[in-house]
Amino acid sequence: MTRPTRLNLAPVDPLPDATAKYFAVCQEKLGLLPNVLAAYAFNIDKLNAFTSMYNDLMLGESHLSKLEREMIAVVVSAVNRCYYCLVAHGAAVREYSENPELGEMLVMNHRVCELNPRQRAMVDFAEKVTIESHKITEGDRELLREVGFSDRDIWDIIAVAGFFNMTNRVASASGMMPNPEYHSASR
Image (cartoon, rainbow, N blue to C red; front, side):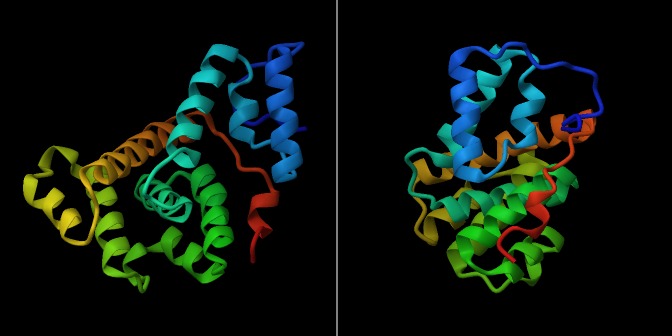
């Protein structure tokens, strides 16, 4: 296996039992161990913190669908030009939407997508969180409420966007490369 990043950080060896089991579940369910997990395996506490936050935000209880959360991840990653996340989460959008074109459009330019008003407001807000969160006003939040988002939903949009702003920077700055399997997934 090639290194998941351009940094020389060897994984803990041997992995703790719980981590080895988690990696085996990922391999079984996804058919691969995402390089982001392999990258964090040099420090189990950091890996656990990352996976806990990721699993809560992307897989946990929310009124945002998994597709909507992935759409946010892709739009944020497009603004940040994060190669790893665009490839990995673009594949997830293709899978959840069953629409390869949607995944590609979100990666390239979310403005060309034909989205419903709820999705349009959501991705535009996520973009603003990424570019100029300091300029978000009550009017921006009200636009989300007008298309049916609750304040809890707005929190989730902000949290997913914030998480991917952080992970985009870690992935890009460390030279993290996506698993090759993502390129052909759900096409």
